Length: 63
Image (cartoon, rainbow, N blue to C red; front, side):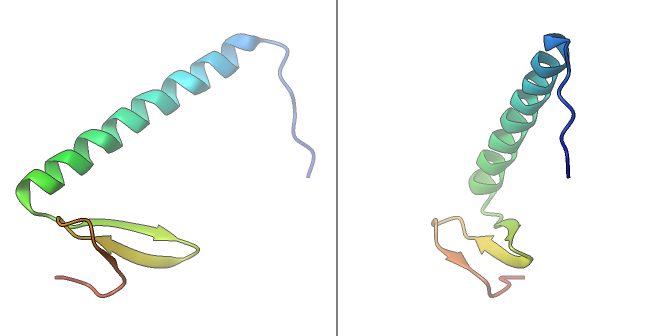
């Protein structure tokens, strides 16, 4: 697969800005979940993981 490179650096700047906004949103949700005792659910390699409020990560659903 060939990746197209853009001449206009504004596209890359906008992409980094969008990524930064997303990262801040994720950080906010993680902090809110921990504050309310709600596990954080995420996946890696197609497997679902749960990060418990105490920081422990498990594949067993706490729900």
